[in-house]
Length: 233
Image (cartoon, rainbow, N blue to C red; front, side, top):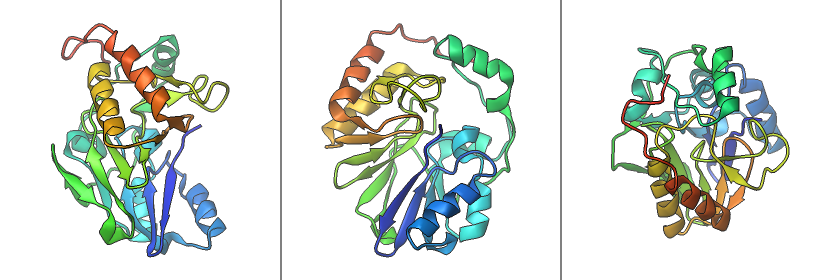
């Protein structure tokens, strides 16, 4: 129920998100399916610091030698210097937070390429026509991959499907279990569509067409604005 994405190019591939701790074997199976190995990973993009996206990042860097790119807004969490806060979005996320699973520590790491606000990373040196861009709102350091062909890998800017996205209604957008600022997310989703993104690949469920993403952005704009520092545990 957690999606990582492998972007294939003529010079190797780019891995978007690393999954839970211990996910390296699953990544390797997909690599082998395409006639590749760990060494063919040229870059690891971590969209945000939650354990289901960053948990295997350090291990996959060790196995592949590929640099990790992430954003400075989540650096304290990547380095495990302080615990994350979680802004729940519904009854399921409140119950899920109580299990403690999302709060588990993972192997800390320091990203090799650390984006700052307003910065982007061109993927052409890694064999792909696209870029990595800061898209805050899910967390302060959320980033997305925007491909020249109109595909976007946006992590948990939005979700779909029942519970964590692995079951029914995977084609209808909804809020992920945790979300720092829904209005900021709406702005980023709108910006991505305005930039030409047509198909959105997400961490849980999907993929989703731009029309559905815009519908979801409109829903987010109807929500009450969250007081800074409020509603998070």
